[in-house]
Amino acid sequence: MSGIEVVDIARGAFRAQFLTLGATLHRLEVPDRHGRADNVVLGYADLEDYRRQPPRYYGAVAGRYANRIAGGRFTLDGETFQLTTNENGNSLHSGPDGFDRQIWTVEARSDSAVTFRLDTPHGWNGFPGDLVARVEYALEEDGLAVRFTATADRATIVNLTQHAYFNLAGEGSGATVLDHLLQIPAGAITPVNEALIPTGVLAPVEGGAFDFRAPKPIGRDVDAADAQLVLGQGYDHNFVLDGPAGFERRIATLFDPGSGRVLEVHSTEPGVQFYSGNHLADGAPGTGGGVYPTRGGLCLEPQKFPDSPNQPGFPSARVEAGETYRHSMAFRFRTAGDAEEAFPL
Image (tube, rainbow, N blue to C red):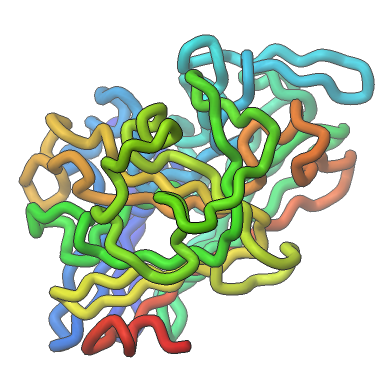
């Protein structure tokens, strides 16, 4: 396994498995409405496929800067930094050798929690500052808490998220997520150009394909004749969450009517990237042995907005020297008999 260590934790009905490669969430077993546990996150059966395959970021920590930076370039205090690029001349999740491809150190562990640490030097993939990043995963009574911290010895930018792909019907179900119901309390998105870089404006979602303020099936509008959906080949967009950021609150709710599983994503961040798994087909076998279909899983990635370092109107991703970056998030689970119970008023 070439240095990839596997770490298992458990609490109550929940079991989770992590990899030191990418501090990756490899498996997460969650009970359905009948108490039957299934793995609800996507991943590779062969651990070496996390290295061999084109990156899909299954369950990995995305960083130092999650999502896209235009041209892989930004300016900080008058100095321009050129990052490694990996998508149409832009930086996606910090280039071709991001946090998802690094071996993290297990710094602490218990039966129900594990903390991973990664040190990257000044100039790593073009970023300024020696950075120490940590992620703590802790199983709690209702799911998995994820807490990121990072500190650097000079001003830099940081934006860390958990890139899990969920299918609440079960990883091995063979089903798509198109029948899952999703609710996101966001009145706007950051629309993108042809390179999937935000244009800088905020576009209201009112009444359109991106309006998830009331829960609806993901499949209802995913192939609608909407210019933004055409660019993303489905949903691959940052949603501007309503209300102030900086404290942990519910930012999305996902419900699978078949299993009854409900996922509530909580986060302190101002945005969430919703990716509807548009490019999942024809990959290497998943953890259950099957090959995932298009839209066989989805991501809800809380974060700063994409390209924030180049967009002065977006929430800042700047972290001062010696300051501690923090992002607290959680995947919290329950079950429901129907949509009314899954999305109480």
